[in-house]
Length: 143
Image (tube, rainbow, N blue to C red; front, side, top):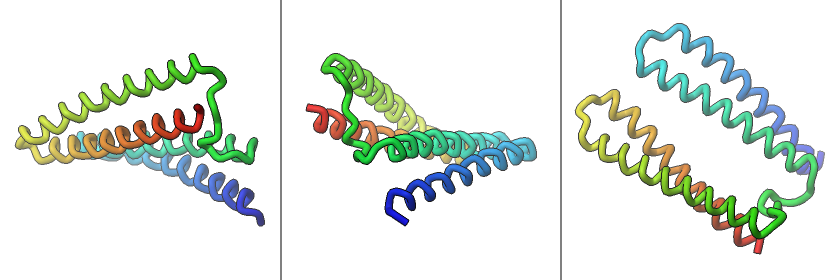
């Protein structure tokens, strides 16, 4: 089996797992009664859904092309500028959210709230780093 076929099979298997996880968590949400548990399970459900969408997108790219994901280029200079500007705007919004969440973490005495806010802060840190990588690689490859 070629590397590409093996990767396609791996992604298809992971897609099925993510879909099952999402359905199972949906059932679990109905059985818990605490707000924190519902929130964390809901986030896990959304993560599984997000992973499904990302994996589906990756699958479409690798099934229809031999190019690397970074090799996909935007068609026009104007499109590149618009997308880059939108990503940078989102980066600024994420930074404001991160600053606000970190401030609240330092102020709150509620350990449950602190746990959830720390989780949000970790996600925002990851999103921030990911957006920087996308902006850097996308526009370096496109020029």
